[in-house]
Amino acid sequence: MTLAAIQAQETWNGARQWSSEGLIARDHEVVSSAIYRYTDIAFARGEGVFLYDFEGRRYYDMAAGIATMNVGHCHPRVVRAIAEQAQTLIHAAAHVGYMAPYVEMAETLRALMPAPLNEGKVMLLNSGSEAVESALKLARAATGRSMVLAFMDSFHGRPMGALAATGSNSGYRRALGALLNGVEHVPYPNCERCAFGHGPRTPQTCCGQWRTFIQTVLDKLVHPSDLAAIIVEPIAGEGGYIIPPDDFLPTLREICDRTGALLIVDEVQTGLGRTGKWFAVEHSGVVPDIIALGKAIGGGLPLGAIVARADVMNRWWPAAHGSTFGGNPIACRAGLESIAIMREENLVRNAVEVGTHLMQRFQEARAELPIIGSVRGRGLMIAVDLVTADGQPLPTERLKQVIKALGQHGVIMTKCGPSALRLAPALILTREQADEAASLTLQALQSVI
Image (cartoon, rainbow, N blue to C red):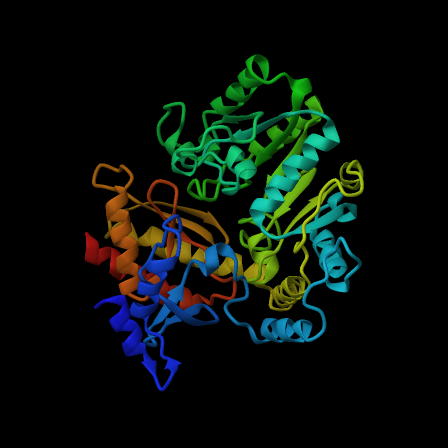
């Protein structure tokens, strides 16, 4: 059916009656081809852990806006907070004057931090990518140094500065020449697929070659006195939900302390309870100098932040950085209400309990479904590797077929790493809902074997 025919069919008495087919057709006419879609599903509304299309079909949303909707879709309290704030003050810009939601969000984020960041300072922004770029800029300004150490398998965003630190996919850099100068990459310790050829291992039996590699880079490529920062994800997200060895973050902390560099931890995806602690870095006991935040802190609205030690943040002079919409009052109110709900409903603990059960379901299914390889994660940040008969990552085209099949079975997921299903649902997911979503997922996998 042509686009014109669809538009005519959807218009009745002058009012548009949307259909999934019609919306998708109109999208293809006007939206950039750079926007990749995992599914062919058009979303009409969301409620809790579910999304619905325009024909009323229900889907388990195991993506949650890519680890964003921690308290689910359209939580009544979040909706009410947004509406109330919209009636009071929509936007005024933090550069023009002071706004209560901005201050309250900064106070709330700081209070969640481990010491000494709980006495640090905050800047609110629009997104995780903007937070990463701001963190890199702050590190350079505060240290007077130029070089940054980042990791392969990392994802820090797609804008040119954040992209310079991203190392998970060459496609993000395709046809781009000079990005932000002064970023060197080293391998992230991915023990299951060791960059140094040592075969599948666990984080507990890691070869440790990554330490030698970092030191070689500092000896031969980046003089320690030029190192402004090391930026790292505590769990590599886009790279495959890779959990590093226990000594990884402590080693980076030691290097920063020894060289005078700053440790930047990107908690955009891992932060705010997803891994079973408010911040994933807490699993290691390491405290960074700067934390970059985004995704879930806005309660579904665009919001990012950096939290830094006060002495680091104070090295920035007035007007050194800023953001017109950063800390928008409505986004702050949505985020504040989401954090309040998470506290009251113990959703950080729920992430551990339901996440453990969900991982167990997929681990048990490996015996009957050889397409399932490694199952790993923390809390409700779970990866299920899909593999061929010889244990290699499932080819990209087959993986796309699997994700489409999941949609047909009523489950929405994205991918991470070479061929892993990424499970990052709302933290309100119950054990019963997790069971049903897992069963539907396993049915879909059975259908494509």
